[in-house]
Image 1 (tube, rainbow, N blue to C red):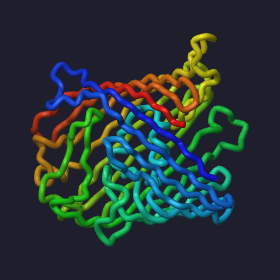
Image 2: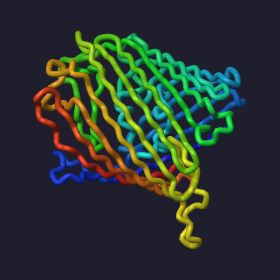
Image 3: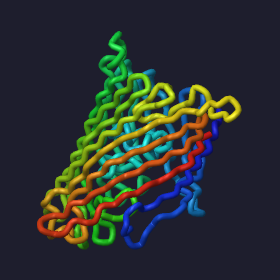
Length: 363
């Protein structure tokens, strides 16, 4: 069996500040235009190819093949989502905000390797050996001979009970460890950008990855009727030249579906009745609120990062409204207020206010 899914995301982003950054990147953009191909053979083998054709080029995002070993175990090989948190395992088309949470800024999106995954009762797990990319790094490339070990366990402890308010509560923890080696022209280090696309933290040359990097990421999900919540935290420690640098982040996102459909913590809402002017059906309408904070350890300043140009901390508060017209069709609007804190006595960067509107089609 071969299934084809078409995906389109068209955005408009605008800075709402009195003095927007230079250059002002308020613009219309075709964020994503591509397809996902799923091939299933004999029910036990599944292959996927996920490609983006935006910007007049072809980018392979995910390409993997999977074999079902048992009811509770599957083996996957290729380029796949970085299996460390529930959000990182969720397609971007299902996220309640147009962008990822603040915590995800410290985590890779995808990597290439081999993964054992599955679900048994209320427990889901992932265990992978991957090439070892970095946050915002390319998931399909390998830059040294080292590999990362990534693991995650997710439990729904009350799934089989009669306790309706907490039946959908999920608790998870993910972690990774590996050794990364960079170079001045490819440092393999995290770069943090604001939701307006402005770089707010970057290491300066010749800083580069030079040893072990560890990540720990506890997370939870919860839903009850039209209300849902996702929260997570990330702690990282990585060796940069001869210095250990700690970074941390946390985020929380809550949603409420005003039209009464059941909410999912990280899920596309399917309208009970699709939008129809003739019958007065509004589709489904969801409100979103979120907050997060990310900070880079003081050890990075001033030798590895310039405290004047690289902010030590970013705090974000966001609001959103999502209109789901029918299954797979949505209009999303997100607003984020971002403040920045510099290291030591350096001056803080001006706050940013960014609004993004998106039309999204998933068929």
